[in-house]
Length: 206
Image (tube, rainbow, N blue to C red; front, top):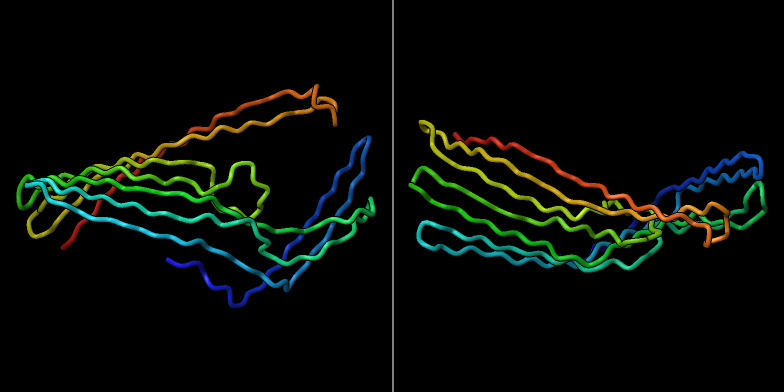
């Protein structure tokens, strides 16, 4: 798959920031519309195949996605903060890292009308760690899917039942400065998030 070709497009972007406190009062607001847009996708290449070992059929596949270098999705203009007079930007950026995802599957043909299937597939994220991009639709999860099921005949119909278990995790690290601007007084915090999901599949063919 080749990268996309950018022909035309436009968008709008808005920033509204209000901070009110003892030591600070901030008001920044800007909205820009009908801005020329750009969207880049990466090169991708996939390969797969299957081979029979008697009653067992092995399936293998892999797909590679090239990285997307950081770029401006919308060609915005700088604006001046209403409260401080600083020159600010409304940049809308995007980027992605290169990844390879894979799949491995097994079919066991117990008889002409009964098949058992197992598979494992990856869904690695293209999210760039510590990125400042603000249009990344990718999550930070690297997810693995395990699936199993069976296909059999009921009268003249073919029925498939199975389940998919997916799991992944992600660790976030952030530092909180007790005294702003003084890194020696920062407190580190680490949080781990775990993801899991079970899907039940049912299909039939008349």
